Image (cartoon, rainbow over all chains, first blue to last red; front, side, top):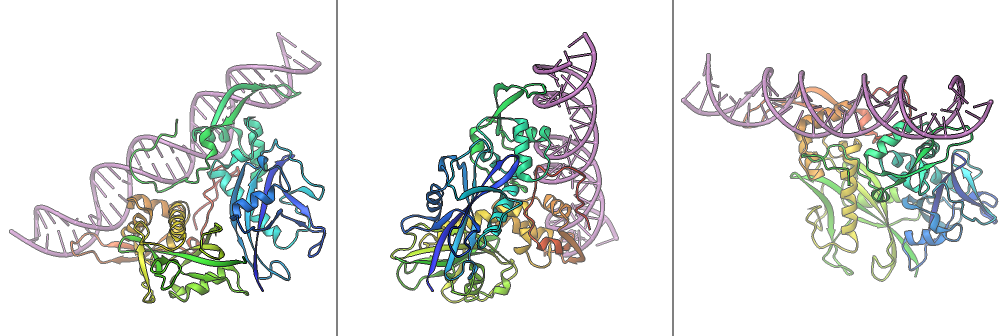
Amino acid sequence: MPTGHEVLAAVLQVRADVLQVLLWQRGKDPDRGRWALPGGALGATEDVEESVRRQLAEKVDVQEVAHVEQLGVFSAPARVPGVRLVATAFLGLVPSDADPEIPADTAWHPVDRLPETAFDHAEIVRDARDRLRAKLSYTNLGFALAPREFTVSALRELYAAALGHPVSATNLQRVLTRRGVLEATGETAPPGPAGGRPAAVFRFTERALRVTDASAVLRPPGPRESTGE
Amino acid sequence: MPTGHEVLAAVLQVRADVLQVLLWQRGKDPDRGRWALPGGALGATEDVEESVRRQLAEKVDVQEVAHVEQLGVFSAPARVPGVRLVATAFLGLVPSDADPEIPADTAWHPVDRLPETAFDHAEIVRDARDRLRAKLSYTNLGFALAPREFTVSALRELYAAALGHPVSATNLQRVLTRRGVLEATGETAPPGPAGGRPAAVFRFTERALRVTDASAVLRPPGPRESTGE
DNA sequence: CCCTGTTTTCGACCAGTAGGCGAAAACATC
DNA sequence: GATGTTTTCGCCTACTGGTCGAAAACAGGG
């Protein structure tokens, strides 16, 4: 039994205040009618990251996908019936203001209320969701879920939807500002129908677009590095 | 050209106060004479984690490997000459007091002064080292590098060697104690030849053995969870 | 036996960071 | 102008990490 290799992408976006994942409905067996992650066989001349971007391009406008990172390998011998197929899974993030064209067999589904899924794809979606939730708090990954410009309230709702629990606007703004990743544009957004003070518009700074993993505890000794400019 | 799949393990241990990796010297082409990571082809009836543990057993006593985790996929089309070979890389950790038997072609090498390595294995070792350094500070991964019982000074030297920078013993003890992962045994270790106060002996608690990733900033609201018990 | 040197341990202090609260600002509608 | 709504900002508290220095507990030498 030869070993094949496929790539799969769990593309996440906050839509209607709910974290959702892009799935397509299989038209043939095995698992006909069940919902699957976009992906496909690894090509001979590409690595897995190139491959997942290529395959994703068949379902959505890849320009809209702001962040792609490797989740891990799924390799249970019988994860797909009949053939031996090892999968490299990816996490993809789409800003909440994008509404990419998608094929007819494709739809967004809330990550916490998945339909009947194909193969081990539900497990992959869970892993993607958990990875996002973990990294949202200690990295700048939020920029990949947010529009280019936004108010603090809008960002708060995004984080709340993605994390699955309420977030304080005050604290969110202070934390992100202190990290040096939030920047006021000077503009203000018009208030809603009920009135209220107009909200200031922010964007992520250049440095925010580099996802910095390190929230190092047990730092090397010596004076702190400045976070500002 | 068919696609094969192999697993590779970067097994790290602090030896002689230096972070080292287990490598074996290739006896035949390609890359004869260069140093390679242990590993091999994925079997038909195993997943990648089972496979890496099986392959590792051929080089070292697997009982000594305290922690194994997936690093990622390496899949550049020409990463191995001649064939298309996708690799799943793993990070393995061995406690510093273990000295496993290893074959004649196998040796430990400092991760910061590698010999001539085969294929893309140097990159994998770098990734393993960086992963360890990142996770040491915000997880309990240290337990996998330490003996079952140890003094704070010994643990400090372990962390310093693994992280590559000095670590304060005071702070290390306080941080780990507050996390509830350090526990005094009540015993004391005899002082060195120069005298000095005898050091208290510690061990990691049960809860420390579960590696807890979450160092969540932007927590859900409400009272703090107690770390005690 | 006391003094010195060494190593560990512990308490105190400081700074940086997150969470919470409420007042003030800036708008809409009546 | 009064009221209601939303945003913004400052203040307070709690917790955590980093640093320092004193005290504790040992060995060895005079």
